[in-house]
Length: 161
Image (cartoon, rainbow, N blue to C red; front, top):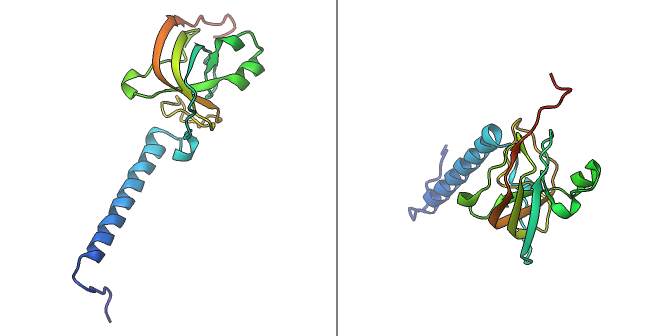
């Protein structure tokens, strides 16, 4: 009884085995990345970029949730629900030009030049402090940014202990 059919010696089975091994290794690395470093899946990310180039002035409205935390300033006077519905993620087209925003800072204003994705998703730059997956929202992929108003430390609430 043969367990392995060696078949013709033209290398096709070796090539197939090498390709299969490479796929298994890549899937393994991807799963490790998701499970230990970032909890979003490839399908959570936005993929289809718009052709329309836009320049937006945005404000950081980071809150205590894992959610989209940038808002076009033309919506800054809306109530909290309206702001949440219109907030979006940002991501750098070039990882070297990534703007680092942290939840301990608020009211940072930026001018961004770039394009929205046509589908909703989660920014590739998203880092959750509690490894939660936020609700999908619009994603703006920027090529350039300018800081209009620097961030300021969030003042502690009088009710917090």
